[in-house]
Image (tube, rainbow, N blue to C red):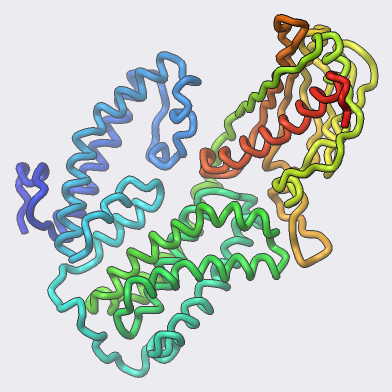
Length: 464
């Protein structure tokens, strides 16, 4: 098929592999050099890896300087024609392969779009009946002998394939590379769900819902394996599942459409190898191009029926808080117990005792009874893992969620009342950062509420 310039803007028709690959590579080259020129004009550096660096800074527009906003607007404006061409060609390529066009959303998925482009570049056109059974293969083929033809047997084979690989990749990322990032939480669940369905549908096309069930069960079995091998605890696996399960289902859905194509399944071994190799490739990229963790802030306020002078005494140090009733703390998240202080004024050292150990907080600003601001020089573990073993200490319990500092701000209100605001500045080194920030912000907010409610009850003369 010859591709004319006017074809780049069309949405109808189909496009074959050759033109799709050519336009993709040439378009990327043009776009990359255009972005380099823009970066040079704005006195910034730019290289090929910038396209896969998580845009966490850009997602918080209020934190951008005016020159950063101008640079971002220029990048977006020059990207629009390339987005149009890429999207239209992807729609036509999916139509050529015989896949549903809604899979175009993967064109915009960070990191997964690389795998998506690779698949669209190698899959043949839809020239066979998608409902046909697989052509018989020579009995010498390894996968033919390994994968049972029965649906249940092929599902079990899928789990026996992806589970040990998933455990090995988890250990590679967390224990060897020290990464809790895009490779572990994005690439791995998508690719393992995808691979499980390809194995499940290796001998014959399976139904959509059975493929979705296989893709859902694959990360579930992997999570249980990580739990009973003492690699992770229950709570962290539940948190990760809220991201991993939908991604695994997305991979399983794509696998469903491919396993219905006999021509595609003839190259299933190569596709499976590509999926598995893609995951450590992403992890290697993350290791080579580490991303600086942003400093985040959580603020919580509460009105107290007591003057600032009385509230201040409870802010500086407070007696032991009763055992928590909140489910999040009962599940193992660290919670504050008491606070003590050695000295008075700037330079004093406050110790805020948590259920897992003390935060050490040197005082930076002592403006009684208005502002108490402190840094944090020591952080305890953020949680105690639920596990069938005596103790599990995954690497993310040390240094992956760290408080940098905090403050209490007291504002006088009419009628001898006080508005007490608590702020915590912290960093976490887990990616994608916006997803994990949802969890960390919610946890820190609950910690604030526990402390503020205790101060409120005590200052108002109701310590119970």
